[in-house]
Image (cartoon, rainbow, N blue to C red; front, side, top):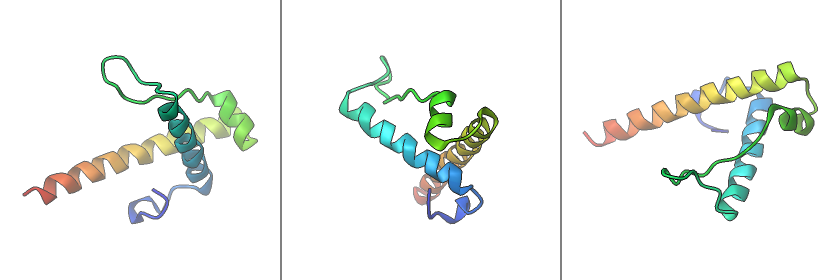
Length: 88
């Protein structure tokens, strides 16, 4: 995410938020926090916690989460398309 050309427009704050999310994913993995049924790792990271961690307002935290979600969805789509093209 940090260096990929597709994501050159993502803000530095969203990249920092992504790093914080990855830290939480690592902790969840260590604590074996998984969704029942899917086995997917989950995290709990509220807007209030993001506001505290990034020293920002609710509006800013919400904007950063939306930006990060958008780019992660774009990455997911990009990787899926890339894998599908590679298998042709």
